[in-house]
Image (tube, rainbow, N blue to C red):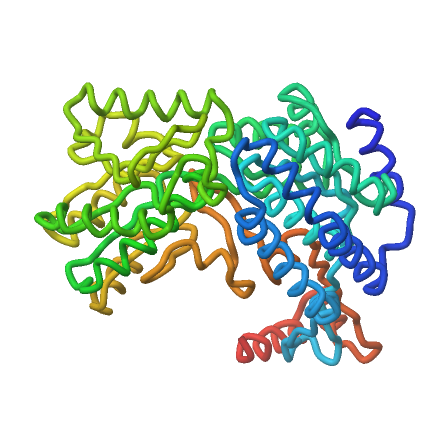
Length: 466
């Protein structure tokens, strides 16, 4: 079926069927969990086949672990989040009372990316299901085997008017984004996010855009554990071959400590990946086109005088699309390496003379999806947190804020619009309807016209309450 036909079926049901009960929502979440548990091997094999090299354990920790934690959080809190929320009634409206009724929006569209093709598709879809919506999912055509398997498994566990998967290329994605959803959720690049937002705007469809950008990592002068910091930075940078939207994009380092960091980073890479070639823990770049783009960034940097330092372990036979990790020193602001989100195992190192210089560099760029800070000086840390704006922050580590169910995850400005995870995500897919129940003893009629002395006395009394 084409996207329009599937949408029409879901839209019709959302307008005429009784909204799903909490028990029905729990059942839908349980089916998503069964889908994962019963088909873990098939799913990890599909991801491996799409990437060429990406081991099942990597998919387990980077996709499935996060998904299972998210499902557990949704199931634990669903009943409380779904209840009407009591609100305090102002004295001048008593004895009436007000509350907020949390209702499903209707039909939610989810457009997922290729880099974490399970976590970043089923995660928002499950959150929308928890909020009582019907969901249409468009996974990426760049990971076709995973997308096809998701379509097959979702069809086994859900009726098409509950949850369905739409497959296809860019033309299908454009048709999908143009549907009049009650909410459209997109994860991907900023450039494509703009096109999605434009398509959604024609229908006044609210959107959540989870984008990316150049997430900075600051090593403060107070950082005493360079080895520990380098290990965490290397892990965040090289997870999934660097193809992570919140990976540290570039490093801001106190001037004069470049050689010290280079040695520590090289040791960290060797510890994480004793070998690269054929190592399933070190993911391949997803396609030759993506690899060619990364190589072009490096070639331009070298041609412009930057120093490219290979920090990987000794090379073996070599395997297709496993790009070796490198540090880049001396990159110039005009280079694409410092203009575009890298999305690969390349880490530019930018020396700074003062913390103010690091903050000024960050604030001169579009607002990033993530920011990382390493050090022990809490005053310096708080200055950075107060003077910069980013989607999220992890202090003395990388990536970890995305795994905390109690923290919202999302971008700001060029790095995104809106957030999800936990109750924030539940509310993202929920209409909070204001309900005021008037009392038979209400005195509002005292404020009706014709206006006169009685009205003046009542308004004088109300002003004193405000």
